[in-house]
Image 1: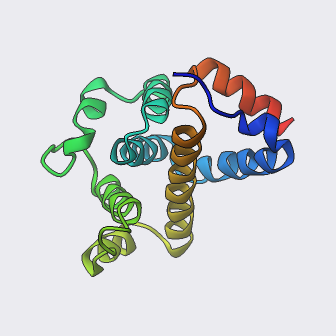
Image 2: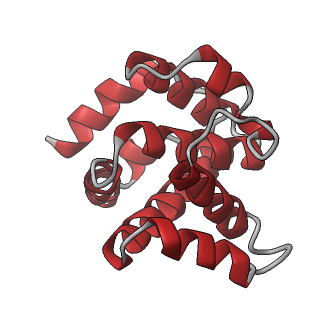
Amino acid sequence: MSIRLDPFAAAPALMKDWMGTSLAVATSLEPSLIELVKIRASQINACANCINMHTQEARAKGETEQRLYLLSAWREAPLYTDRERAALAWTEALTRISKEHPHESDYAALKARFTEEEQVKLTLMINIINGWNRIAIGFGPWADPVAAKAAAAKAVA
């Protein structure tokens, strides 16, 4: 499939701002947690581009194959911390918000494991990855991770 539109060429100033915000939010919590959130939201949204990119990034940051393979079944897999479980539940709740609003139990788990500031950071990260999923799916279903990193660096510069 071909790219329908290059958003970095079509709206460079806005995409530079979007990329800057994305990078700032992505470094606001621990890298392993951020990658799990990005992958899980991308799985739910069926964004092959983002699943491909973020699984590669997660591996590069030391994530194990086992945890990546079991991420879609995280509730049944004993490999995730309570903090990761709370983040994944919140990710699923906000990513699927059109089908069902988050339950109080989702927020209670989040509140038990994250400070108020971290709750905001995580929620912003979930919004960012859902936005990237929509950009990738809407304008072109595939980007090589190396090329995407180069475009991101160029957009922020």
